[in-house]
Structure formats: structure tokens, C-alpha cells
Image (cartoon, rainbow, N blue to C red; front, side):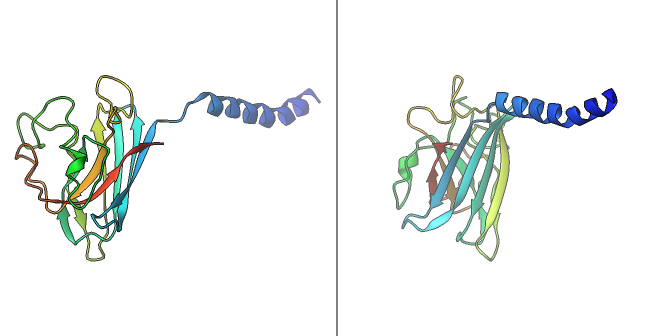
Length: 177
């Protein structure tokens, strides 16, 4: 009889302990952006989630010219079209040079090129090692924010400071989630 009472109580005990554990675990910091062209047309989304190994960035593009495009994190949370120069330069709080192939690089705003298919869609996922959303010495979302920018051309992964990536064809201001 005692065994039956314990067996009946076990699922309830496990369920309530799981709820307590989930409630005690804070959600990971996040940020998101809606990407737009200079004329305001939707060009995709970006999401950033903070994890132990850095910032997990996911960029999904729509309506972008097929081909290979550079994608970077820029220093300022402004996306004034049509050229998006208001987004500033690449996010570089550690003062490294541009590009994974540069011996003095890469900086934190560097990300891999994105291949856009004939249907105008593309996506990249990347981890910015050591990055944080809003804490530490050089957070992504500092006082002037940050933006995700898709460029017209591929990044050559070496030329400082821009990677010869061409003009800016889409931009989205990152906002804390």
C-alpha cells in the first residue's frame, strides 16, 4: 500500500520540481531586427541570442538579389535609407582588423558571407565568440545600439575596414527582446 501511495505521488513531485527549476532559470538575453531595403521593402529578419560561447546570430533574407552577400553587425542602431550609412562602421569593440583571413582580424562585426538563391532567399547562422547583448566592457547594444547590414557584394575576408563588400542593400536595427 505504501508503494502505491509513493508511486502515485512521484509524477506530481517530478512535475512540480521541474516547474520550480524552469521558473528559477532566467531566459537568455535576445535581440531582433526586421531588415528592410532603402525603399522600406521587407528584406528579412535577424535574431541574436546570448549563450555561454557568445552571441548566436541568425539572419534570414528575402527579396535580395541572388548571389553572395556580406553580412555584418554595424555599430549604430540607425538604418536611414537609401544607403544606410547611418548604421556606422562594423562593430569592432576589440579594435581588430577586418576579416577572418586578416592576421590582425577578425573583429566582432565580421560574419560569413550569405548565399542568396534564385528565389531571393538566404540565411546564415554564426556565433560571435565572446559577445554579449548588453553586459560587459563592450556590449552589442550599447548607448547607440547596433544594426545588421546586408551588403551588395561578397566580403573578401581581408580588406580593412570593409571587406570590399560594396554598398548596403538592407539594414535592420537590433532591439533588445
